Amino acid sequence: MLPDFPKIKKDIHKKLLIPYAKHKRALHMGILNQMTITKVHEGSNSRIFRNDGTQGTARPNYISGSFSYELSDIKDMTIEDVFRNIDDATEEFVAKLIDHVMNEIGTVCEETGNVLNLNNKKFTAVYYLELLEKLEIRFDCNGDPVLPDALVGASLDPKAIKEEMQKTQKDETLRKRFAEIISKKREEHNAREGNRELVR
Figure 1 (tube, rainbow, N blue to C red):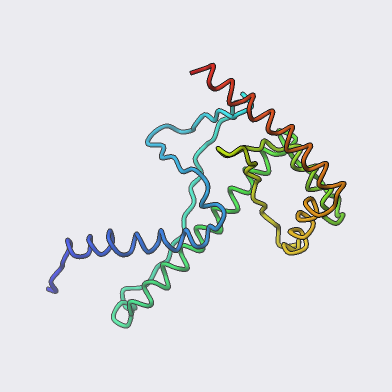
Figure 2 (spheres, helix red, strand yellow; figure 1 turned 120 degrees about the vertical axis):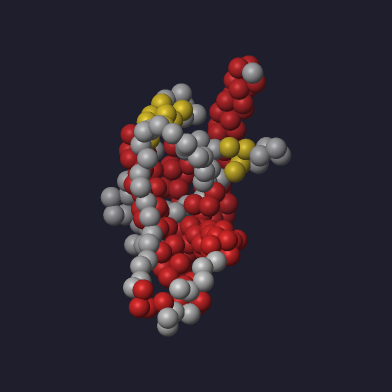
């Protein structure tokens, strides 16, 4: 009988493999790392309370990434093989998670009307401003707007979109409209913050 080392295996799993998997997951998730993660310990669904006063229900969705091997493979397996398997499983998990999150965001945007359909037209700075008008914008402690990040689909050119967005600061007409939108959003933000203070 071969000796077993359950405590050592548990320590390796807890102190090495799990932190490594979490690190790789964060690398793959990119902008989605900004999402707030809340643990739900029981129940079949969760109630969502949105800033605009509406409510919704979210049901848990099982997402996983996995790998498997035969016992006969173990004798030739290296530590590099183990981490490669973890990399592949983590990438699979994140791909499924991103797909799920994007579908959920799309559904909510359709329900709330926060959708800008270009109808296969080129994305322009004007469309960007129209999109900002639909969104809730926060402001930091200095009163500066915290503009939303943009997720770009595979069919779009990120560089071209960034250049269009930058036109809102270079073109005089666009810059004026941008300032008007930000001023309006600042008033909305201050009103929301004022209401929160009254509730407290």
